[in-house]
Length: 422
Image 1: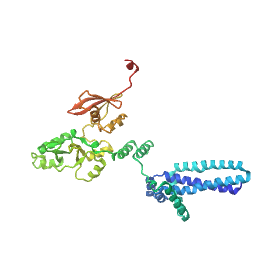
Image 2: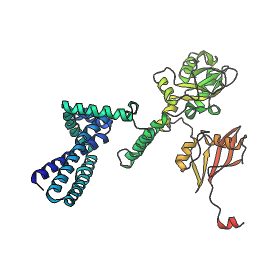
Image 3: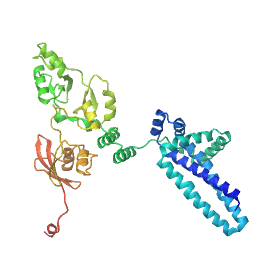
């Protein structure tokens, strides 16, 4: 085999390796990382951002070099070996070149590019941009892209790189495992991702827990009610709780009380209420409440009745978790009774219980443990009512009116051999 053929073949293999590395680096760096490089004035970052705007073009450009180069390398070695030594040696030459191509010109460059993608990608972008500045190369690339679109269809052009919710959650989990983020930061990211699908009714204070006063309540009485509950605002109703006519804030009530008007009805201090449907997206409501003069709204059900109230704090807690201050009452939590048995509040969200206990209870029909029991029983539960759901037994321990306040949840265990015999 001549020296010239060997040199040309090696040059072709080097070209294949370089452009395989370029393709891997450009296709595996995120747009966010490229933007961060631009902010840090990394050389080549601007070219990288431009390439990421059309990854299809970048991939085709690298293939226009690597594929012909590999073909030329294999062809030269095969032809030279066949002429000099016959068909048998030609096959040996092809096998050797293909092994070199697969290992040293494909696998190794790709692995190096993946391991050092942040260093390789900007440099690769500069080289590829220089190649794309050649007029003849641009023309060939345009013809190839046209032919590709004719075969695949124009509507099949790849969309912009936008990760799905599942991918974002997986990335957050991976970042926590790699110690790039701590646990609390990972939880916040996951909450933000799921916040877009959260409905207002999942974040609201339900109707039975709403502190509200009649329009015939005096200002001093309303102040006492707010202080006793440890909140700063509440609705005012007319005929009943479904007839919300206003909202009052303790600051305004104190102002009237200091001026000697504490025996007047709260209606003189109320403001107009704002109503939202319970199926409204929490993220949409949060945008509306930012900068608005009111921070509490009335949530109504499909029949126009009062379903509950929601505040800006309630929406923020959907992202950051419970925000507890010195005036907050104890929120529903999981209390372990014994192994495989827990006591929970009826208001506890099903997904929170699933997360803390590791259960897989259905949360598509009911938001709370109490609602789950209501749906399963199909009737108003009483103390001692029991129902089995998803491998767990729910025993109603305490009821206030028609509300389930305390539930004992026990994990159902397989029957022992002795129990089966019985």
